[in-house]
Length: 77
Image 1 (tube, one colour):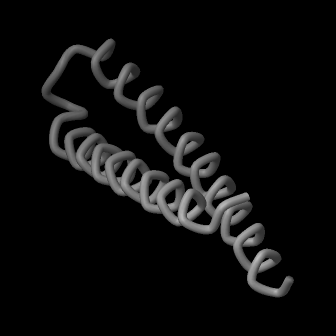
Image 2: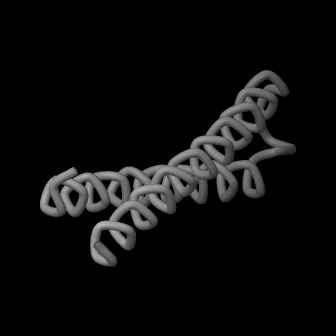
């Protein structure tokens, strides 16, 4: 695999990881500020969204680690 392609892929994955973590933080902050003030369906939807974003963070992080490992293997060759 091409090193430049892997670098671009890592940059893209890190960008998405940043977006996901930012949105996740905002949802948690909204939950803390509004859990008693809004309709319960919004609270439940926010909890589901935070869990989904947490899983997405984990998956993206695993992809980043895998690509870093591939890059290390390419450098060792």
